[in-house]
Image (cartoon, rainbow, N blue to C red; front, side, top):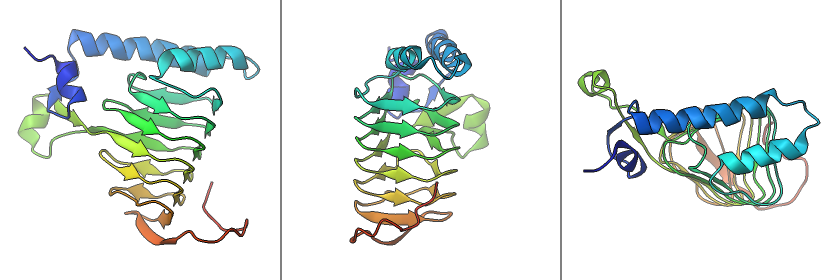
Length: 195
């Protein structure tokens, strides 16, 4: 028999409130609570907690508190990762984030979704679709990245965007819904992206 966790990880409809998934969320919340409650100068303990919580990390990373997630083990970050305050990752499905990624404040990365039809929602069904963020990406403040989205390498997502579709590499994209504005081709140092 397929477990609810197996269904969740394979993108099928599943129920999140069984014992196994409830216990795993509780374990993550305990680690996240400790991380968020630490004094700002406790950098070594912060790193230990993030390494214990996440599926994989590089050696160089930093999360500003507060940070929130559902399970933690579905989050994989590359080398030289930075997230500003109030990052929320609903990681019911895998979230793969490349190297040299900057995340602005108040960003939400959501793999979790709910059926459109109310009858399925009333039965507590939900689903999850993986999110992938490539290398060298800058995600501006207050961006929402929806389930199933892939953001390519070298992309900048402008502040306040709601990303509902894939963004190919080397693009500046912004808006609600997020749209491609142009290709990034020149190095000027003064372009606006948006923290």
